[in-house]
Image (cartoon, rainbow, N blue to C red; front, side, top):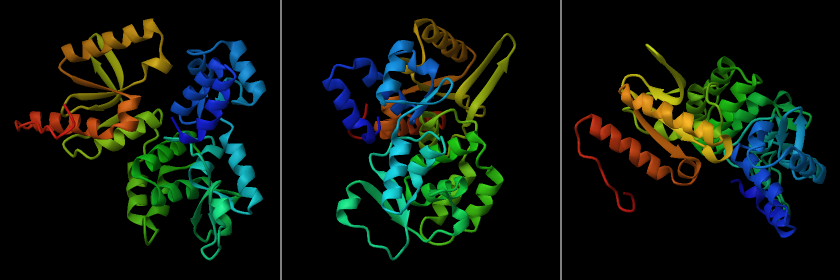
Length: 316
C-alpha cells in the first residue's frame, strides 16, 4: 500500500471506521483508482457512500472511485507556484500507479531554490519545461510519462506508461518518438519504458510483475495472452507460448469471492493438464519481495535449460 495513505488510515482506524480503512486499502492496491465492484468486496453501498461523504474517497464518475490524493497534490503545487508532475500528475490524469505518493511531486525550474520546509510536503524535480509541456499547472500526458520514465524506478514508470496507453491520452507511436529525441541522464531508461509499455496490462500489479519478468531474457511474456485449444479458452495475465509458461497476478483478496476463486483454480488446473506451467504471485510478493519472484523465474528458466536451479541465501 502507498505511503501517502498511512495517516488517513490511522485517522480512520482511530474512530473505528473499519470499512473506510478497507476501502482505502483496496484503492491503494489498485493504484489509487478503481471501480465499484472492487470496493463491494470489502464494503456495502451504504459504507461506500459514507466514505465519499466523509472525503475519505472520491467518486470521480458513476461507478468509479479514487483517493483524494490528486486534488490535494494539485492544490499544494499551486500554492508554491510549481508544476504538478510525475506520479502526482499521473494520478491527476486518472492513471493508476504502483504506490500512491506520500508527497506532491512537482517540477520547478533548474535554478529555483525550494525551501527545506516545502520539501517536507513536496518532492521537487528540477527541469525547465516548455510551454507545450504544461496544461493548467500539470505536465501534459506524454511529458508526464517521459518524466516518470527518466526519474523514477523502471517498474514504477512502466506502470504509469501502461496505464497512460490504456487511457488513450498517450499514443505509443508518439511516446516512442518523443523518447527517442531525449538526451542526457535518464534518456536511455525513458526509451526502454516507451518501447516496453503495453496497453494490454490490466493494472500496476501486472505491470510490475512484467517488469520483473523482463529481467529474465529466457522468457517473452505477452500481457493478457489468449490461450485457445479444442474445448478450452483462457486469457492469462502474462503468457509465453514458446516456453508454455503462465504468470498470474493473484489478487483474490480484493478481486474475487469464493466462487470466482474456485473458477480461477479450475482454470489453472486446466492449463497445467494441457501442458502449461502456471506460476501465481501475490500482490505482497510482487510489490514487496520482487527478489523472490525473480528467483522463481530464474530458477524455472534454468530448469528448462537443463541447468541447476540457483538457491541464493535467504530464499527457499
